[in-house]
Image (tube, rainbow, N blue to C red; front, side, top):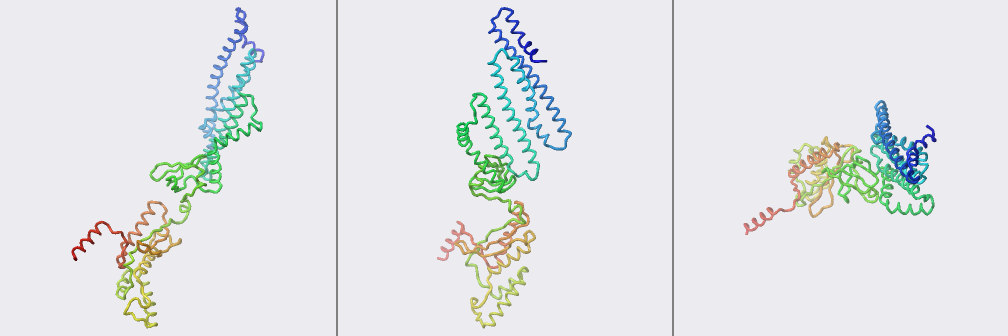
Length: 427
């Protein structure tokens, strides 16, 4: 059907009203209303039919292909948005023909169609972005990347361009002038300050590999301690160990200090670093009788025998008077215990011997002398790690009395009551 025929049909009602004696202006007005109603009804019906047709075609196509990209296109409503293009094209073509008698209505409807096209293009672009994000998240290489941040940034630019074009279509004011661009830039910087900071932070986080989705992080400032579940433009979402969620501003990842446990998870062991505080008054030199008694402990028997021979040889060679233990060279119960702890760790199958292992003294404190255990467990899983650590210190704490040592402990109310009672009884 050519344009002339369409115009003839669009003016049938107008001609009829004029022939019935109605004023031309009113006939044109009523004819425009009727044409609008007919066009809207036809477009709605056409849109419904065409949308179902396009969606079914996409679904049938996606079911036959092996790739999941087209499946995500269907889920993101890409076919639905594409289906709107044909009715829009038909309306665009018919507007200047049907409403030829009403230039105002023609101009108004053309502007509305252009605005709708701009919005539709933005929605189609958003659908493609979401599809791309979901598809890349299936890839192991991109799964831990903040894809949501990039999608949000691109959508901000897309909506910004769409808003500028819409303003230009509605007002006729060009958005490409320097003044407009300058004002728009100022508004964008003011409104989207946090978004821009988050965008910059997202790029730095991704490029520098600071945080990935799935990393265990501890961020004391925000009370976060758990796994990162989402990284987007504005926030990082962390699921804590108590199953609560903490949201952290993305730019805080580069502005503040936090702890990322990924290095531990990727290493061959998880560090155990804890001290036992020994009561200083319980430290003493070992007598020959003490050494003989401690030789019954199998882990340290070879060490005691070898060490004691060296001590005796030195003392005899230098004619040391051993009436007092302090003279010459001697072994101490704390030194022997330290060696025992070291030997115990080396015999423990749960400890990784290829990583650093050490038992050392720290500087004396008002709570005793810290004997620090520094080693790495093979099993890095939290529950198993805690069990391994607990087993080590259970054993060492139980072993301390065998070396005539005491663990420092602040006195309790019962201890003070007993001391007062004993003092009163003595008096």
